[in-house]
Length: 408
Image (cartoon, rainbow, N blue to C red):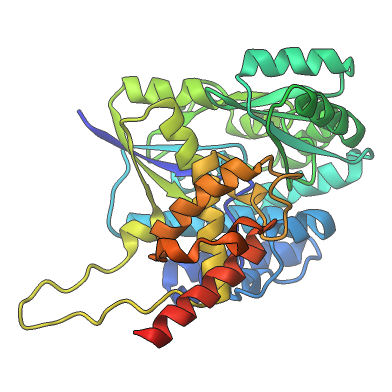
């Protein structure tokens, strides 16, 4: 039997203004209202405008300046995208990646929306209070076993392999100095790596004190019976009402996750379609593990269909010459092609120094850019090859699209 999974993103779920066209939608408004109301309980300002205004701070900016708000937005984004997707499709199973597991459990009925948002807040308070050494996460283009050898070569027990995201993509986490050493070793081996804009070293031993604090503050929150089937990548099994789901969420702070095995297990059980709730590049990781799965985004499946009546002629789609739109499409294109989390592919990131994209890979990607934006090959000249960031490339794409539009 062919099965459909809704996959809830963790840190990459949020994008500024992602619900700008859906202000007034009752389901999404309910999510934004709950997040704002719970934030007030914890002395935080409203966050809804971040999801309604495309000019709001990015995930990278919030990771550095306001990780509390970022975590609320990640949760709200994943749940909101579920409501987008659920308008036109029905999942057989819900799956969450990292913090996305709380979103999956929430829409499955295990937690009231307000209580789930309180869990996000308690988690952030615990991290802020107990994590005193700056740290983060580093994606490395190595299988998990080879990444473990790289970590062993560093000789620092505070850094650990934490996410086995695809057969050739692993994430390690730890204090900043240890991650710098890991990147240096990767560079010496000619292995591509990318720093993720994560405010903490999630899933690593360094989060142990925060996990204790989180467990204590979250203890009063009670789970409810599940209404939908949920598969937990952390536990490697389908959840039921005998599982302590608060304890599961606490365990996320210190426990590594084998996402590859989770996806392959679900595939063996009939998984053939994955709908991403939070477009974070997880789809590319799924395809790297099980290539015959159909991956779609919540926005794609919820978009209204074009008219098919012979009496109605659809207007041609306008050229995508808006800089913000082009930049976002480039980020998704590069993240998908490179199997990077979307949050790692920031517009101003240096493609070679930060994302490991050398000149040959850059040239290869320009062919995909030309196809994405219908840019004639003649425009892929030396100007395009010289770009060092996606922001520069986006500006050149906009210029080319505008020139094409004026010559038609």
